[in-house]
Image (cartoon, rainbow, N blue to C red; front, side, top):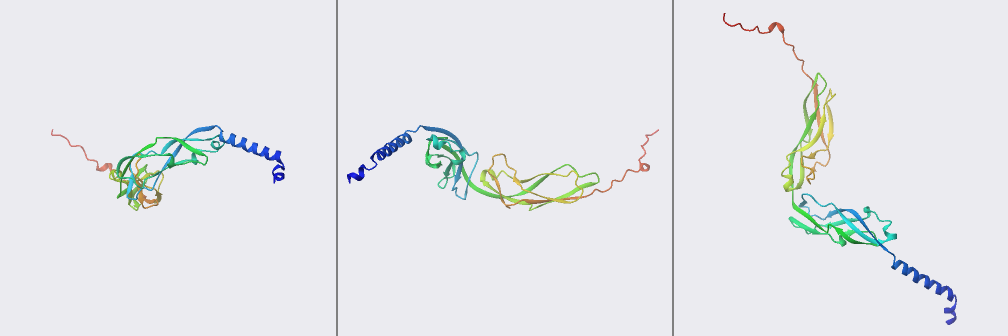
Length: 237
């Protein structure tokens, strides 16, 4: 037994020393701190609820890791995920913890800014509104726009109740009439007539709407007959 242990003894000792050195180097490698701006993913919001108002959609995440690990990390590898399955209606603040951040293996979350996210939760609401198209320009001389037909003429919008109640129409965009001499049809994707940042969206139909514009020859204009001009009245002499 002693003979077996002593066989290649120098090589075994060298291997042991090499393993100790590697363990020491890896265990004492200098750590780096790197900041990333990453998206916030709000998940599991109950179907009857809706996020309202301004929502924090990006946060700063500081990761800690070894030089080797941090070299391959990018912001696309990290995401903060907020579980909203237990939220209540109204104003509230949801804590953001390191456990909610998906980070690459070999790194850890050292800091989050902000770590408390303000939220406003409202009941979701739907309503039907008309689709409105705006027209610019005019057909060439001798032609005129008679009317237009939007199909479907209405859409259903959806979103937080306080925002949906303020939207009275959906916009089909601006349609130019310059140069058009015959009927034509375009497809457009309507958008709710809501202020920037609104969370109101088109719920139905899911696709675009059709706008058909009817162009006809304009009726000829009859010039005035100079012979029928009314003679000016003369006052009493």
